[in-house]
Image (cartoon, rainbow, N blue to C red; front, side):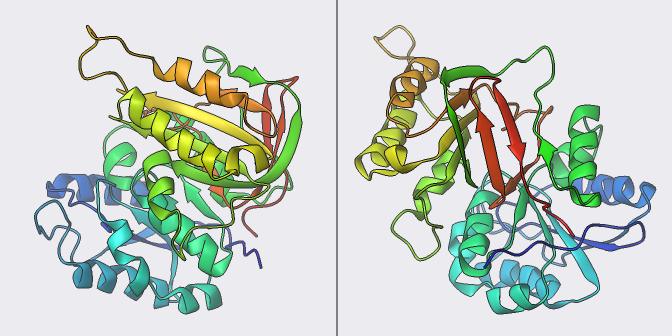
Length: 312
């Protein structure tokens, strides 16, 4: 059963967490708090947000304490990740999904947070938001395009929402046609890490969404080959490729394929329309993607539309 969280209102309490890697610098937390408070929200940060355990923001137990504490706290209306990095797949078996299902709230983040978001959708049906993080985009100067799209999506119930690229960044149609299904994906590496686990949503008949950073083209190739071999490209209602930042060969002097060449090849195997260069990923100017929401692609127009309200 699909769940939509209540929309955010001025004065609502927002919790900031670090479920993956540590923000390291306290000013990234402080800057995010000040930004949200200027907009009229109350803010609380997890007590373990600055913990350090190697590449993790503290132990798994500490990070779960912050996450589950805010999930169970009915005063908290939204949970926003401070940053990504690495670590959310380690937490999935300890998340209080039952409490979140009883008390749905807005969950925001991208990159490594994708693992947590897809697990939440699988276990609860709750739509989450792959969008800006407090210690990455919000703490200093958030891009106006990113800011406008994000706050409109989580603050205003709407029956349909057009996911429109900036005029200077047109989408590329790799395969024509039309298709509709639930939007599943986000960071490609994290999606693939959930395959074969009880935390991966159903992949049949969905609109696949993929972006990544610092992955060589042959690794993107391997992920797409996995989806094709599993039958998930053919069964997809469509596919959206976001930005693949710094996804270049480690040695460009050797024979290689580019990411654009790789995704163009695999687009032929997708069961529905395929669009590339969608304004989403590890970039300052980004769309917010409601993971789990019903999505429609029109390959003729190169348009992407969310066709249900993602907040109530």
